Length: 239
Image 1 (cartoon, rainbow, N blue to C red):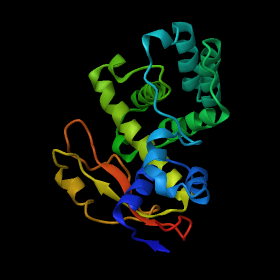
Image 2 (image 1 turned 180 degrees about the vertical axis):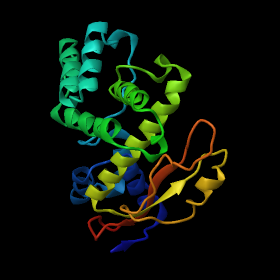
Image 3 (image 1 turned 180 degrees about the horizontal axis):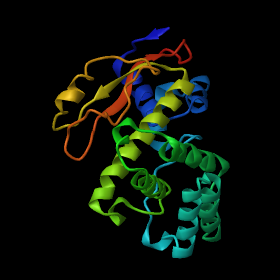
Image 4 (image 1 turned 45 degrees about the vertical axis):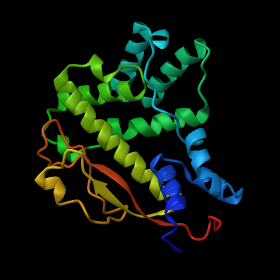
């Protein structure tokens, strides 16, 4: 069924999707009649297919030798090896990660390391590869944005935006709940090129790539892709 539901419930489902809750968690909430308590679920639970982004703390800073091993594996294109090196350190520190976390990390790194963002198509190959590795290190929580010079952060932000958008699209396809998406601009106003993409609905396979390669905003495109219309096929109970 085409879903235009009463505001609060639809907003909670929409928020859960935009937090990348997987199909299994969404269907679990519906089948167990938890849909009416989605506000509590969304704030208290972590999806089985995702985990919060990590910011390295001083107590859990990765040693230089482990950091070098992770970077070397990323430069080889061996994502499994890079993640395993980090997980070995985490296990030794008493923080072993689950299989789902391993898979989530792998899915996060793939678009960053192998995607071809149109916004960066003029970036020199060596510079782009360095940015890919830096972004992957940030995504894994091994490095922080501020660990890199300002000129590198622009490329990192572009790759982060590209990776997040690709992962969200993938999750929304798998959810079978999202009919269309839309683009929202930054709070201080999008550029003229990005304005052309606003106020429209896009199918998941037709959505424009972000960051927008035509964006003229200083510091890079800050537009985001969000859920526009849901189709729930009666899987959620009526309030």
